[in-house]
Length: 623
Image (cartoon, rainbow, N blue to C red; front, side, top):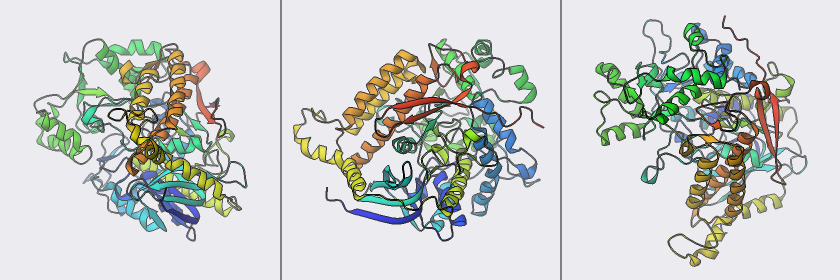
């Protein structure tokens, strides 16, 4: 290939991915590393990249400690019950004790946050959510990161992390290509902070054909946060903990603002309340500790999201669908009607357009809800991601190995989707994790841990050949197309993605099988994904855009393989409503009140699975 190779040497901190996690990392790295070289590599453009790209109408993680509203310990308890006990409480507490300062900075930088005119406190949507005018949320935060970084490389798809050849298991930078020019970019760095995205579109989506991009989580989040870490040999945790969302049908508009601010509620197709009907059956599955509606009512402890999903799914399967969001009452109030429409126009405009296109006016007709296909991500309400060290002052020995948010590969840090065990971080929490990772990365360098890194020309040229191979495959074999896009020598990225989504849906518990799987299905899926990986050696790209799609597919496939191994390993149904192990339909605290950890051998590709203790560092009762 004739593409130029562009080197960026002597980087102290390389930030891969510039969503909220990456921008937080770049901003904080400059504070602790005044003399350090900070470089950002972003697949899109930093001004409009990441999950907040289109806008956001609430910051979903804010303690309000200065107003006496919540403490970090409260948030840990909330996340713990919502995740059925499975949380890295050291990481969750660490994020929660710092997140408010991040939000205050957003306001200083110009983010309009709605306030109570009498008290001056931020206007709440729910216990943890504050309301914002967030159309320009990402550009505002990106500006701070751009001012902090020495260089920002937009349009760079990072495909691999570089590994040090002088010391085993140490990071040395990253490589990738420019999705516009095709040029090969080599970043040699003392530390790398991965702030790339989680995984949408690994399971078959409900929206197909011309609507295929209309999914809930950002469609460009291709599992790179996980693909990069797994390939580099980092341990992963809780990758079975995918999330399924209740969302407005087909447009995937979020429901939180409607429930919390507009005080809407759901009904089945007969106009009945249905959730409580399923609680006795659910208690049999998960036990009273996780589902006690009477205690929840007394203590205002929310019922875990996955269990609400289970009631939704079960009611539809019983033939009493569809499930409606009752909007007709709230929308009689002109102010609430305006808030309801603005919520989507500033955040999920596709939902507002869909309602208009299908003649649905929520003032006169209750719109349908649905459950989404599963997503794998670590920054929203689930806990998948890299197995990372926690803070020294909080973490037990099993959770601490030197530097906060550092993976099991030295010098490799993470934030946002990349970090496992910290659910309910959302945008502000991801930014906060980026800050924590950057501070630790600066300390790692200052402690002399990154001295003497060696990267050979061979490692760089071998990776270049691997990255551009899909283009060569197409060039060599494109004249052998049999019909349409069928070729005996290669598959294209779209064909590979269809195949991945089908096998994830059918074998790993997607919506097409009502989120059900078992050990036999999972083993068949692992066999099929191994065959898919073999065929991906012959994936073809006709241009740079398809090369991007090919590498997104490879990251999605590596992520999916890890999800299979974790789902097979955890022999229980820990999160009914997210997925079900049909061969182990009950929650099993006796054997599985643990965190799952995987390691893929870089040389052999073999996975090793282990249990890690799940410590509850915060007491049960609020003061």
